[in-house]
Image (cartoon, rainbow, N blue to C red):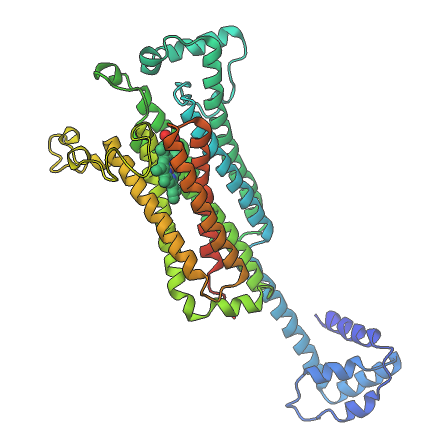
Length: 461
Ligand code: HEM
C-alpha cells in the first residue's frame, strides 16, 4: 500500500516537470496543524513541482510536519474507495454486450414467430407426430426413413380426414416446415443458455439481469412444452369420432403458445433496452437535455396511455390468435361491414349453439364462435388504432425528446400498416403471405410500443 502511494507521488512529480511554478512558496503555505487534509489544491501544488530534487525536498518537508502520514492514509482510503466503487459497478451495472446478445436473441424469437405462423398457414404443424428433444433433431435421411415417417403421419386424423390424396413429396414439404420451426426453437434455447452461462460466470450481469434472463429462459422451456401440448390437441384420435370435426389444434393452446412467444420477445427486448439505459446512466452518458425533458410532469398522462396502449395491443394480438385458431378469417370477408351491418345479428353473436351444459351463460361464444371471435378482433383492433391515433395527435403538442418522438411516429406508422394488413388478410381470405406479414406486423407494433414506453422512462439526474 505504502509502495503504491509513493509510486503515485512519484508519478505526480514526473508528469509535471514542465511546470515552472514556485512550489516551496506554496508548500510553505500549507498549514502545519493536525487538521490538514489532502485537497484538490494540495494536488495542484504537488503537480506543479518541476524537478525531482524539488520533489524530494517537498517530500521531506511534508514528512517533517506529519502531512506525509496523512497523505499516505488518504491515498490508501482513495484506493479502497476506488476498489469498492469498482466492485459495486460490477454488481449493479450490466455490460452492454449482454444487451446486444439479448437483442440478437429477440431477433431469433421474431423469426420463429414468423416461421411458426408459416407452419400453421401451410398446415404443416401436425406433420411430426413425436416429440424428442435430441433424436428429433435429425430429419429422415433415406427413402425408407421418409416412408416410415409418412406412415406415422397416416395414423392421425389430419391425414385420414383431410390429406388422403397426399404424396410423399408433399409430406416432405410440410415435414420440413415443422422441423425448421422446432430446430430454430432448440437453437434459441442454446442461444439463451450457453452465452448466458458464460456472461454470468464472467460477472458481466447484475443480479437483477441474471434473474430476468433466467426467467426468460425458463419461459422458453415452458414454450417448448406448450408447443408440444398444442400439437397433441391436433393429434387426438377423438377427432375421428366427432361428426364434422376439423383436425386442427385447440385455439386456446394456439393462443397460449402465441402469448408465451410474445412474452418471451417482449421480456427480452425490455431487459436489453434497460441494460443499455442503466449503463448510460451509470457512465453519465445519458443525454442531459433528454433526461430533463423526461422528468417534466406534463408527460405523466402520456406515459400512462403509452402503457395502456401496450395492454391493448397485446389483447388485440391474443384475440387474433383465436381468429387464426378457429379459421375465423374465412368468414365475413369484407370490411367494415359484417353482412348487412357493422355488427352481426345478436342471435348469431350470442348463440345458444356454443353453450355447454353447466356453462351458466353464453360466454363461450367469446372464445369459440368464429363470428363473435372475428367481431371481437375487429373491435379491439379498431380501439387500438383509435387510441394510437389519439396518442399521436396528443404527442404533437408535447415537449418530447427526439427518441420518444421517433418512437411515437413509428408506432403510428406500425398501426396503419397492421390495420391495412389485417383488412387485406380478411378480404383476400387469408393468403399465406399476407397472413404471415400480419402476424409479423403485430410483433413490430408491439416493438414500437415498447420502444415508446422505454423512451419515456424517467432518468434520475
Ligand atoms: C392493431 C391491430 C391488429 C393486431 C395487433 C392484430 C394481430 C393479430 C394477430 C397476432 C393474429 C394472429 C396471427 C396468427 O396467430 O397467425 C391476427 C390474426 C388475424 N387478424 Fe389481426 N390484428 C390487428 C388488426 C386486424 C384487423 C383490422 C383485421 C381485419 C379486420 C384483422 C384480421 C385478422 C385475421 C383475418 C386474422 C387471422 C389470420 C389467420 O388465420 O392467419 N386484424 N391478428
